[in-house]
Image (cartoon, rainbow, N blue to C red):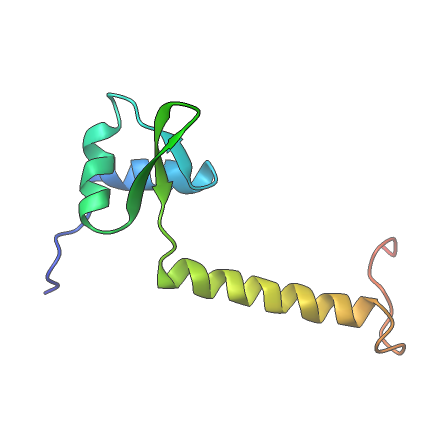
Amino acid sequence: MSRYKKLTKQQRETYRALRELGGVMTVTPDTARQLRALQARGLVRYAHEYGARVAVLKRTRFISRTARKLRATDTAYTALTAGAFPFIPTIEGKL
């Protein structure tokens, strides 16, 4: 069994909403408790933006790994379609 308890339903929903909002969410009375629990787990940090307190998603290893994979995929696709390999046809516009 892990050392940490599982996220509650409200914490999961708040974390999912935070990710969908691009990693920044204004702290409201409805979400403050869940965000505090996520901060205790090291998933969220607090900051101030334009005078308002906001919760910012921390960059975990999983998020960093996903971003690296996406960058590598984009680079490979750009190399394929930019003419580095002329024998591979482009996909756009051909249905």
